[in-house]
Length: 314
Image (cartoon, rainbow, N blue to C red; front, side, top):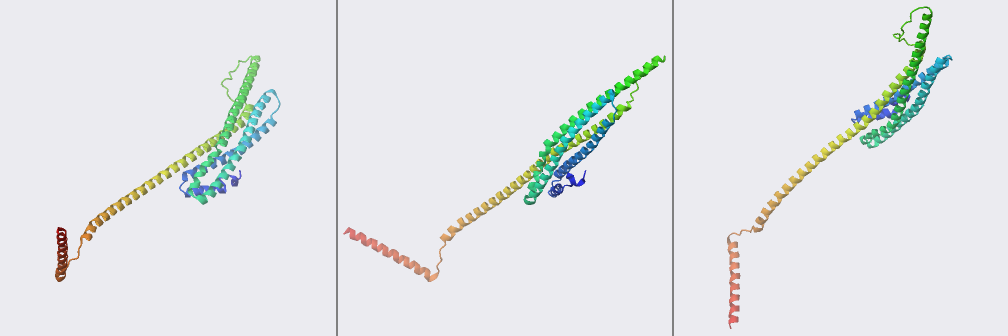
């Protein structure tokens, strides 16, 4: 597999990983990197599976025609057909997964350059590839079961061939007046069946390895969604704390302002009467002169009142 075509070496994916690390989102960066690594490894296993299928095909061509061999060939052919089906289904899905990851990474990076950290929370969009991975896993599990069945068939065929050989051997011993031998303890596999089973076992090993990588990639998608959710909750709590602290500060400032206004109002209330009652103090001749003027005014007023009373009396 060409390293330049792997997800872990894709330019957009690498840039996204860098942005996640720069914005204190290392957990999310690790999830994305490991997800891409699993997909790359899965693709590599697919290439190995192709090689194994070619070997099985060559093995079928080289097998001679007879009754027992035909049974073995049928088992190998069935295994090969199932592998071929699984391979093509997985290949199409893996291509779909890779393109989705690349497209999503490019989109997130472009938006992050404009909106900043908030855009990086879109990494949860990678979970859209989960159905494709689950579909591949189901195909691989089916191929594992099919391979197990074919291995069992060939093993049973081998057992029959061994037992038939033992019967023939004891038959000849009987004709030679020799005692029969107990071959039940001889569990050595027949060379023919061993040659057939070995490539099937290698195929199963590849399929199991693929299944493990699919499990890992799906788990990483679940972890990624969880890590983003935790990050959101932490940011919301931090924002709530800032809001509460700001509210306390505003409340304290308001209380201080009101207390200050009350002090000012009280001071003004006490000062106003003092200003209103303040009179200009007069000294010496000016004081006597002012007093004389008042007495003259009072005397004149008294005379006018007396005159009015006399006129009424008349």
